[in-house]
Amino acid sequence: MQLALEKVAAWADNWCVTINRDKTTATLFTLSAKVQPGRLTLGDTPLKFEDQQTYLGVTYDKRMTWKHHIMNAEAKARRKLNIMKKLAGSQWGANEKILKTVYQGTVTTSP
Image 1 (cartoon, rainbow, N blue to C red):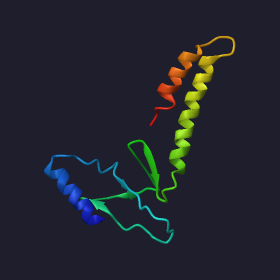
Image 2 (cartoon, helix red, strand yellow):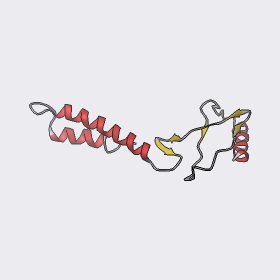
Image 3 (cartoon, one colour):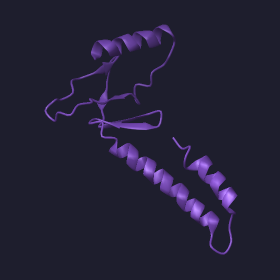
């Protein structure tokens, strides 16, 4: 892994890409509780190991269970559905066509 990090750092230097070393972390994906991560450095900065990573809106945990990602997606959908409930109202509110459009544009297309 260290060799791969060194190659990434060399590529970044070659193409004038700056890697934020304070934000860069590592995750060891394994099902074994016995495997301990080694020491990884990016340049002279040691990387912190995290139990989960979020990349392009998808949360990966070290055991690849997707639990945290699914919980986040569910919470986002519930918040949006609660807003729609307020928009609908029983005595007033938006009509069915507008609610369907809002639902399709917010709940079903969310990353």
